[in-house]
Length: 275
Image (cartoon, rainbow, N blue to C red; front, side):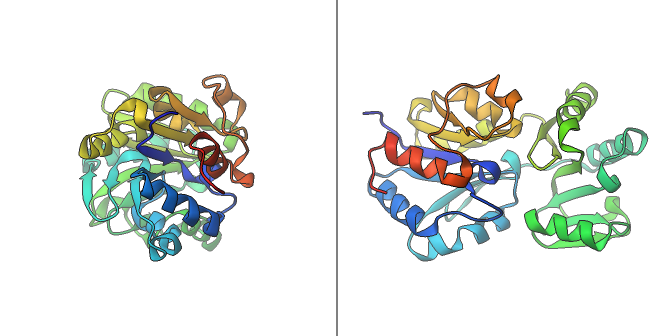
């Protein structure tokens, strides 16, 4: 039987069965069995740390321990300790925003700044747009000038029509690839992060902390922001519900789609655990 010491899963389209939904009682049972075997579970997401902690609050209250890779790898934390944070510079943020102003505009020309203290969008965003942002980002503030925000910024996000995401990721990588990293993060969003930041490099921080080897890691994902970790680890599973371009890059699949608790079912089967 394989020896697994860490399991990392993307959230939206992967672990979650719907917006913020998952089988809480079943996951609590699974996590207890994992912890009995000293296996760490990592929520690895484009979402912010506070959002992820809120998501798993019922599990933590029941005695579960969750580690976190947040903001697509800009933040790494164990269940009780911050290990790593990396930010964009003001100059980098300005150049990315200026680029968006003279290129095909993102949806509603929306720019989202993800900070440590909160999330920031422009005053011109409608109430409907703000409500959409609040589904995935904590503590959303509308500001007059994005460049005047007093916070450390982990990433910049634009929203494009779903079928245009990969084309814009390519444009951003061609323009800023020497110093920034662009990745599709689901629901039409494109995140611009510091160079070298992705979920695989973030998981390495946790591996170093716990002394875990690559072949002792199992990962799950569904989108291009999961590609680096899907490609790095032998025990990596793409969700069957992932888009065609992801299936062309990775062929080992989870046992079921996200809406059927595919991550939990695959872990139970691979590690011979009770459901």
